[in-house]
Image (cartoon, rainbow, N blue to C red):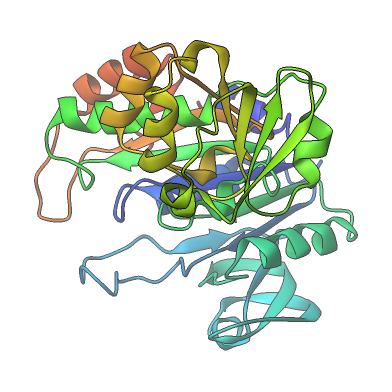
Length: 339
């Protein structure tokens, strides 16, 4: 099972859907059903709510989450009471969501459960640190594209993307949108002596000059970049934004005569909020973006059926995606075999 074997190379995995109804839960169930639990201890949680049998927004039927014997899971206490499995309560944490405290348990007899765990990147990091103290070998986080913090390399070292017709009913558009996200995940890691110092900075926009000195631009975030009158690219080899990278900062560097001498740096790909058009222009002028922390995108899973019933050709979609992103692409529902 190459797909599962690849996951087992890492101690943490996030599964992120690029839109609702793109098959993320099917992907999660596939993985949970095939992990060798006789050899490893696995824990799963979600940054949102997953496992409901009906989507609260689209009112469409959703696959429920099935948890096998031995799996650890963390969910809000209200959802823990609704579980349809037998489990041993391990811990009631101080972490809270809108649905109550986060409860961790181990499945004794397999069944279905709604998973709704920590609701922020910081609380997810605390969850991962706490659960690993229980001897967990692999943590799995069910994420969402609207809350990309779950896929941050600070939380999970490996990723699987779910995409599909719910994102676009046009194969070319769907492939292009998915490819752009995959490109951001694949951005290279910064290899510079200043890297460790930059990692410790907690806010603002900073620079590293050509002599290696760290420069504080006194800018609270990239969103406030327009308030700066001076040319921040002058004399710099690196411009680092701790928070979000937006078109505004990207365009300032893109318009600089020194663009080919400057590297734009972000903490990780989840901080990038630029349009593809702006990014392509930036790259065409010789611009480059690098990250301090990097995730490994293992594969892409697709759902060719949209909530409105529109169905794309699965074979064509998978083939075009593979050609575009150079990674394994699977329609797990259609090809429910060992991958």
